[in-house]
Length: 286
Length: 277
Image 1: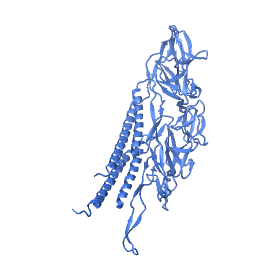
Image 2: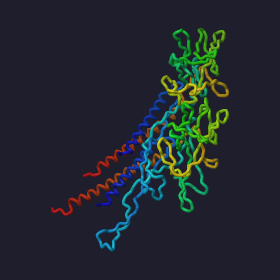
Image 3: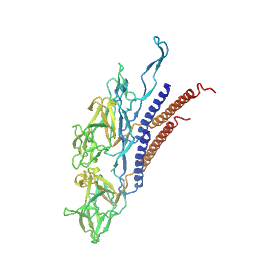
Image 4: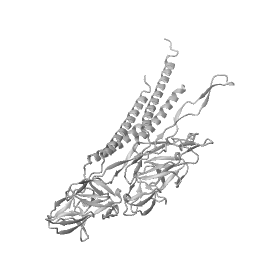
């Protein structure tokens, strides 16, 4: 059978995946702390084709062929989003630019060491605890205080403090009276320390995080640790981190995915015509 | 099914909701004591398509599984309690709060409390013929009376109301005779999630919330930088230029989502025409 027909079909599926990912990015332009995704496409493993039907002792090779394509993974770009001032004291934003000795990261947060190893820039996250008591990480800092006084995310997950416990505001204290210090402690306007310090986690390889929806990520590979004084991480109150989706890029990618999809469809149609000729016209006595 | 379509649809719904909130803010840009609302977005639900171990190829960065989100949704509405500008009216029953506090009012005979920033009060005559300080909708304003109990401010006939910066109210007549009437009760919303916006420019206690935990009484003094200003009203804290900028942004985002929707529609059409002849 004509191999290219299946290649074109795999192209259709892959471009559909790409289109889906871009649509999801566009859907989250207004989501604070959202990190955009990309779908890298990958060709199937190379294989060596041989001609059949020739002398079996001396097979005749045709050459290599990497027939099909597939959407390999959904990759998140954990890069800094722009900060917007909201003056809302419930809003917190992380500015993270953690340096690693001897490495210079490029715009996608990647660096290659002298011996060819690829290293990604570590990133900082708010540490939260979901209803099941599991630890999650998020960059969406639009918090609120529930009726029991717990500091929560907008979906109700508890924000953790450096004592690994959910942060609870002292009775009768509103967050309007609290100010975040440079070392991420909440102090009252009178200057008294409430003993609350936000737990910011440093994830060495952000690609080990798996998105769970509602802005939270689960750590699947690699380790997380509380940030230290040496890490270039700053938390600001009264700001939100905008989604890092690049709208221009997204619109261009959307068109590109659509047209690549269409091109694959055309290829299928060409194969269809070829097959029609083979099936109906070859050997016809007219 | 074409999941792009579902994602675009979900996000268009939430952008629509944000647009509604902006419209609400703009409509209330002249409402006394109105507090601006804004929508909080989160990315919607994720599915991970399982991938077998053979997908762990060289150069792969993320753990196994193809992660797919389904658009965005509005998870909450945040109220911005920033101070609005003070406008002088010269009306003696107009009160404005400087700083973070709310007036407490009584919304029914059972004494259910609600809270407001709207200090355009008036004197209403109740069934007993008393001149009571109420909101413009007629809800009595709660005050701590001189005997320490909680009640309403009743202005005796022939007297005018005088309110000090600390919220204490006196009745003064023409010859300067002064009667203390009590102190207007001010509270701070310490657990704002326990308060929900209600009609008539009020904040009500959410179902199941405890008033003692949700709000704390505050007495204006120089330390907490609170003050009550008589003859002023607090204007809405909606900033029209911010709202307009937000509206343009949301409209563009909506447009982009609509474009993604029509693009996925084209894709389905292409798939439909796979066999053209």
